Amino acid sequence: MKIVKSQGVTETERLLVDLCEQTFLNLWSFPNPYKEDGKELCDLLVVFERTAIVFFDREKALDTEQGNDAGDVAWRRWRRRVIDAQAKTAHGAERYLRSGKCIYLDSQLKTPLPRGSNDSFDVVHKVVVAHGAEDACKAASDQNVAGSLAIAYGETREYVIQFPFFLDLDKQNPIHVFDSHNLPIVLKELDTVWDFTDYLNAKSKAIAQLDGLVYCGEEDLLAHYFLNYDEDANKHRIGTDDPSISFVMVGEGEWHDFERSDVYKRTRQANEISYLWDRLIQYTGKIALAGRSIGVSPLVAGRSAIHEMAKEPRFSRRALSEHMDAAIRNFPAAAGKSARNLSVMSSFYGEKRYVFLQLRAPKHMRKRKDFREVRQSMLEIACGVVKTRFPAVQWVVGIAVDPPKFSRKMSEDFLLMDCTDWSDEKAAHYLEANKVLGFLESGAQWIEKHATRFVPRS
Image (cartoon, rainbow, N blue to C red; front, side, top):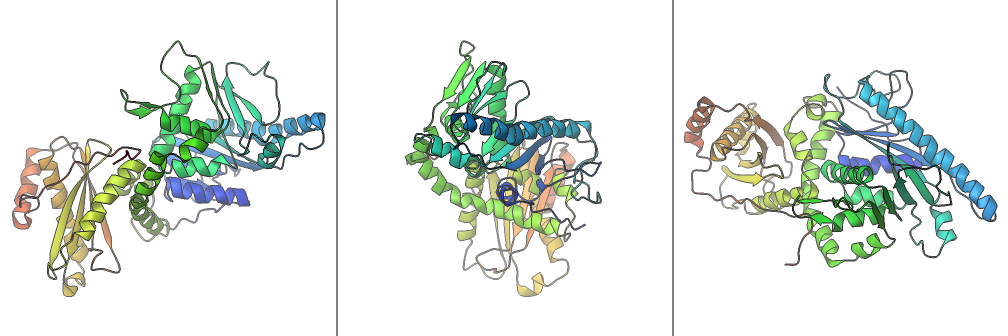
């Protein structure tokens, strides 16, 4: 079934849609979904496994140039309409999502959100995107060169003195507030489901544990998160696990300095190749949304090869794309009209491996109606052989393509092999089938490549 998604109503909503399609990809981001009563649930919904992220976009110009008192009144009015009203709506959206009621992608309530019937949400993140205060914020102080909103999460809001460009937010039921300046920064720097949700999870944990968390802009908190690496837990975090520390403040300029560091520049350059992985997922998603494949639900709601690929963080996609690019470049030019190349690639998840099969076949073979079936069968055998070589692996993702070195138009086949119920009989079956093909029997080497989020100095 073809699915036509909304592209957003306002200019800022369309910006949000574009950014989220790049970050969460087209199969997991849904603009302007609807509730059963025909009312909009939110401006954009991201659904991945048992995590939901609801975005609310609001634009209203803030004018504080009418004197101090008038400026304070304008700020309070702006906050009520842009922040407080959207926060209330976000809490209602969370309740609706947790209720298990149906979500639709169209106002006619004809296209339900592709999702398993028994799925529920363990985590719901609420994000309010507030536009309109940036220019007023810059004009109010020469020190605020970015125009970002300062934010504080604390135990109580009753006695906090409200003043312009500073938001005190409820830590008991927190929302995340991005603004015009830092929305593109956050979504472009955390541009996978894993990267974005890991940041929000770390932030939510810090909000819950600390008596107070204060920062001058979301981009500064992001820099703090990137620079604050816990080697024991192998994770980035916000604040510290030291129980004696109950308050964390992140000053202005953290992002400005981090963005200009050598490690940041090296990493941005190194990550360019990783978008090969994204393009594979996006292309397949585009075909599914157009109704020209097995459908959207198997890709979105259940485990699939594409779903598993989308789980990889950015630094893992970098390593996987480097491996694929090397395999493509090294495909033998003088191999004849029939040739193949098999690569085995590691995942961020230790129980998973990827198989990348390039198969070159003569033109008359490619024209056969069963050519794709033959290639898929070869891919399945290769995945089965990889499982026998890596006994601890529970999932094998297979990717088969025409060698890009020789093919202008590339067709892809994907396969997800569930090895959680592996048996000696299955192993024997694939080893027997492999006697003809000889995958991984030529003494070929494969590399378990270790990737880090930031690229160290070489």
